[in-house]
Length: 316
Image (tube, rainbow, N blue to C red; front, side, top):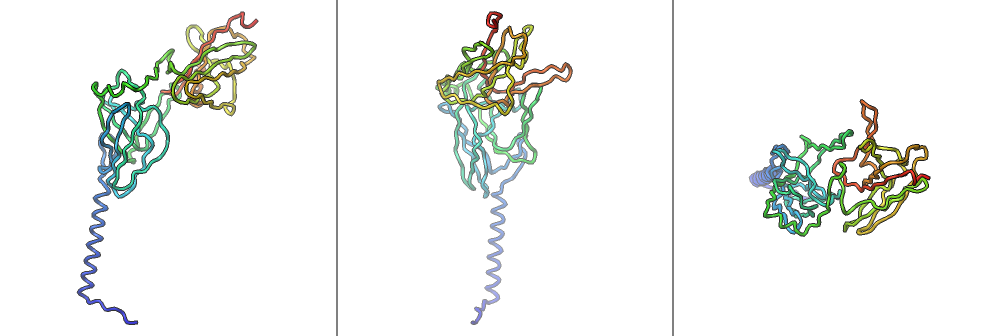
């Protein structure tokens, strides 16, 4: 079989065309890769960002734009920071957060929304939404959480401002009636009632008056009022493996009980039962100076709290 002869001149033309295509492709990839630089303390790509951030009908909507030739992974919801005293600080803005990963395809955009938790007194101000990996550290002595970003990570960022005029968009957002009482974050819609003591057992009812299902660890941490201060007491001792979460459907309640530690001699007094979503949301911290154990609750956790007074007559 004879080979087809290609004249030398045509070969040069073909090579030039191929070279030109390679150059154009490389130039295209270089341009659409985007330029990475540090802006406002975060490493960002000029071609991947958030835009059209709006507060409407009790929801924040935003669009993630990806103008690169690579797909971009994002989470279910972005982190939220508010500028407070000139510094960006993480705040709670949405009702709930899941961990579903999502993909924004090359040269495309994706519009997403999330429900705003509630209207607060200091709701107005400057905000930014952030997608990307962040690290967090917990102060075991206080339960406070500090979050930091990584210098080698690239983040997707969008900015917006909430004004007084925009607060009308939150008029239909239910207030979860969150408050701090005795130093614990609580909600008037989730609480403990009918706490009773009899024959070595404490009975209680967990109440959920919200429109969503909640999950609560069935074992409470217990504190007793000693000289006017709440002190941790091992009233019920249950191994970690025996902790489990219970779910309470919307506008419902459930009743439980537990046996108290029979070795406790002085049972009379005021107590409070503290329930958190998970047992890991609270822990005991031993003061290195005094050796005293105290209960620490993870910052931002909403607890269900119930109160009980045990009298001498109840012990007869």
